[in-house]
Amino acid sequence: MATKLSVNINKIATLRNARGGNVPDLLKFASDCERYGAQGITVHPRPDERHIRYQDVIDLKPLLKTEFNIEGNPREQKFIDLVLKTKPAQVTLVPDVTGQITSNHGWDTITHKDYLKDVIALFKNVGIRTSIFVEANIKMIEVAKETNTDRIELYTESYAKEYPTSKEEAIAPFVIAANRANELGLGINAGHDLSLENLNYFAKNINGLLEVSIGHALISDAIYLGIENTIQLYLRQLKNIL
Image (cartoon, rainbow, N blue to C red; front, top):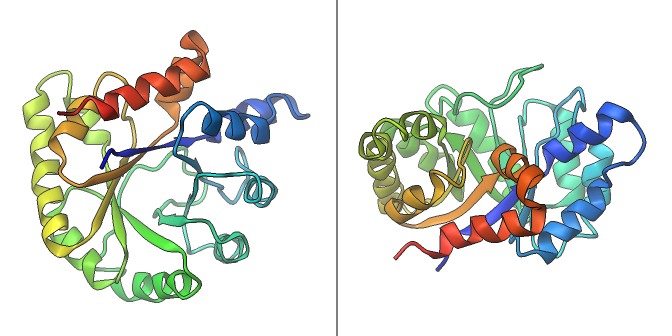
C-alpha cells in the first residue's frame, strides 16, 4: 500500500495572516490540494493562532474529503476541546511549548506515559485515530505502545540534516525504530523537513510507512513549481519506491 501524502497548510495561514483579510484563501487552498491528489490535510493550531486559527479548523472539517489530521499539544484544554468538537480522522500529539517556532522534539513517553494514556483514551473513545510524535528511540517507541496509541509519527529532522552527508547513516536509526514499531503493531507516520530531495529514500527504507505530513518544503517548492505540480512530484516520490 502506497504511503499517503498529507499536506500541512500552516504556511498558507501564515501568509494570509501577515496581510489580514482572506488572501490566500485557506479553505480553497486545502480543497485544491485534495483535488490535485493530496490524500490528507494537516493543520497545527497553536495557542497564539499565529498561523492556523481555531476557527479555521472548524471551517475546514465539513469541506475536506480526505483525511483530516490535527496536530498539537493536548496540554492545552482548548486544543482538546477543538479536536473533540471537530472529530478529525487523526489527532497527532506533539509536545510543543508555548511560543515554539516549530516542533523540535518528540515525547518522553516514559515520563508522560500516564498522561498520554489518559488523553489518548479520550480521543479514541469518540473514534479519533491517535498518533504520538516521537524520535527514533526504541525505548520511547516501546513505551508509546503502552499508551494505547494507534500510531507514532517519527520526527525526521535528524534524518533530513544528515541525509546530504550520508544517507545510509541518516536512515539507520529510523529503520531500527520502524522495525520495532512494526513488531509492536504500531502504525508509522513521519514528518519534519522531509522534501523532494530526501523523501523517496526515506519511504523506500521504512517498512510500513503509512503517511507523511509535509508542509514547509512542499509549500516552498510550490512557490517555484506551482502547487498542483508540486503535489504530483511528491506523490511520485512516494509511488516510486520499488
